[in-house]
Amino acid sequence: MNHPVLPSYISAENVGPWHIYLQQVEQVAPLLDKSLHPWVETLRRPKRSLIVDLPIRLDNGEVAHFEGYRVHHNTSRGPGKGGVRFHQDVTLSEVMALAGWMTIKNAVVNVPFGGAKGGVRIDPRQHSCAELERLTRRYTSEISSMIGPDRDIPAPDMNTNAQTMAWMMDTYSMGEGRTVTGVVTGKPVSLGGSLGRQDATGRGVFVAAREAARRLNIPIEGARVAVQGFGNVGEASARIFAQHGAKVVAVQDASCTLYDPAGLDLAALKRHVAEHRSLLGAPCGEPIENADFWAVPCEFLVPAALESQINRYNAERIVAKLIVEGANGPTTPEAELILAGRGISIVPDVLANAGGVTVSYFEWVQDFSSFFWSEDEINQRLDRIMSDAFNAIWQLAEDRRLTLRAAAFVIGCSRVLEARATRGLYP
Figure 1 (cartoon, rainbow, N blue to C red):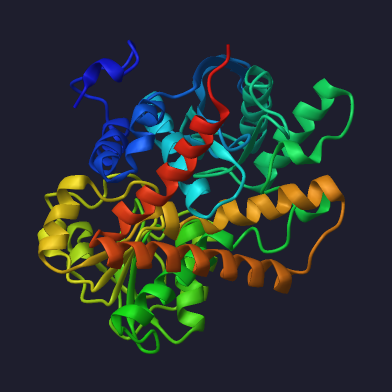
Figure 2 (figure 1 turned 180 degrees about the vertical axis):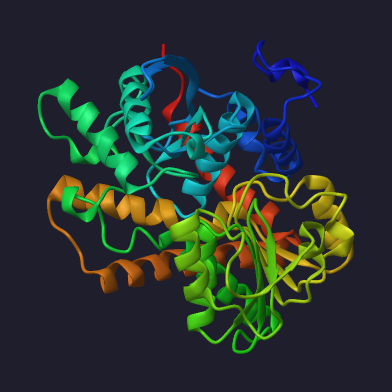
């Protein structure tokens, strides 16, 4: 690894998710067309990174400080696009990696965006709605020089939602002196949001799984599914799998793991999480050890939580036939080698969870035109884009004997670097 490419404020010994992203770029670089090799360094360097201090007044009158980030990884193909997450473990390394994966992801599904990402290091469970609103508005104000409908368009991510985006849109609009609906996506429908956006990432996970299952001869009807994470992506993925005849036999969140070989009651789980904010104490399924989640017998495993959840410590225990990455970066390169040796296929995150950004693109287009599509139109367009992207990746993987991740990175990196090379350098 060529450590000098790292920014000065990142430790070469402990670079976290950014290191995983760099490993993936290094592995695919030799597979790219030779004409693009001089430009590969572009992928190893974020275009710009911003760290902001976020002081807010808490409900008790005290002032607390939080750290926020916004990273533009690459904008060669269009404005930056990527979510904002609120989590106590957010780091600059993580946000840089997530922005890099967004660059590749947007190119894989061929939407005209570059890669960006944001985050605030906070445990939202410890704060009131009023405190989170003040934090969101302060964060938006601090990063306002980086965002805009033709510059960088944030969206919801972990622990943020449509309400968060409404606060961001309103704050940015106050600074502009006009309503700017296109500055964020994932907004409430009443403020220019798109129908179908809420389930888009989970629906995309299912479409990617369906396309892979067709080629691997894995029937979805009656298939067993295990889902890690029961937030927006995990819950929607599980529900859509069940709607197509699969059984969701295990779910896991930060609080516990629930298992039922006959299939869990997803509606009951959703109601419980809405009320209690976790799966702990849910009225269905048997609790099992968290480590045993990975050994649950299933056809489909959907990691839809945090990075590096599938690693060298648990990869040997996984018995799923197909892993479909609902989260960003859930599988370490070391674990991927172990899984490949055991014949377990992976549909990579840069394709599998691209449904969210695809429908965000639809929302952005609808906001510019002030003309909105029906939910059926949204879902049909999403299905077509995801299926076409999968077909191209599968074909390349077969033609060149690559993993699906390597094929996806070849396609995504090639599109980004072709744009960079064609634009040239200024001055």
